[in-house]
Image (cartoon, rainbow, N blue to C red):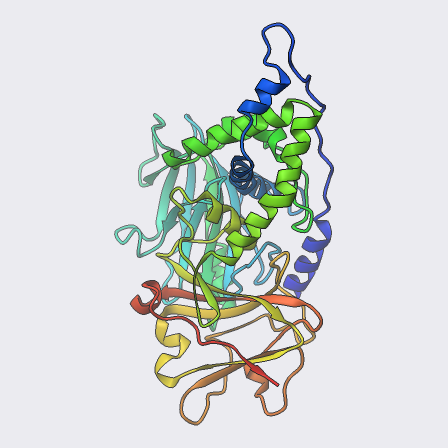
Length: 449
């Protein structure tokens, strides 16, 4: 996990906000132009400004990560980056897997060849997301039972391209995508690393790739405000939103962008509304991602969001690159006191391993950037591979604390940050019906005085 500590710290340090302001536009009122009073009468409401901002911010968060990938981590289009276990610095990573990552580009004339190894006895998936954070593809034995590995041609839907013999064509609903190939580390991380490097990408030509929209590398503490509307035209013309139900909010985005360009007064109103209302609405969305039980929130929707762009944006902030519910069920527990001791006991009849076909895990992340938290013993998760000690009745007690409490098995302790708040993320990969249907939640945390 040395790579994790280094990247988590470096990633946090890199998030510096670059100021981005647009010149003021004329106030209007000339021949053929609406007066200031007419503009104000037709101006969007505060609610419309807030909704438009929450819609655009989701795309901007993906663009921020794209810029970091290329500028910080040296990504190249259609080339895989093989990560060491724990070697990622984005929000809420899955530490149970080896990641292979890429940005893939296709066009009307060019496909990309994918070669995947045969994987037995451990979880794996080839996961692709679009530029709005929507899952568009998983390739594994569940989604492609007749072709769970081998060779594929990833192509733009509708492209009149001749695919080489022996490749299964898969059509994609756009031109650029983020890839995360996951292979469970399990009890044999070295074996996972060997499989990981047998994933291969080969461009079948030279796709035309539009220059990315360059947003500043901002921090979660200093999110961009009115400046997001400076990128409206490029965003609306660029990456398509796969959900037709977004037409109305996209029209609101254009209306708010016009207000922000209308002059100093209009821009100030947009900026003020974002700072006083939209940011609070975003935090409320994060707090209310789904149903809460036992102190744990289970997102109502994840990975594929339908028309729920507000949840999509919230997930892009707190857990970018989330997969869909067919693959995993996530639970979150927010705002915990890092100096407090909490215990969590799973009854013998409801151990976490009983609810996961593949694996379960719990990690602690900081409460602002949602990054994995360094700690003195370099333990960043507990999972099915941990050497956990069970109670005499077969139950399992996990303890979350900044220092090891007396009487607690060291193996059952997940360190937390004294003096600051943190969140927990609990994952069930291959959830059983009880978890998938929302009938089973992790047990409540109990404060230990």
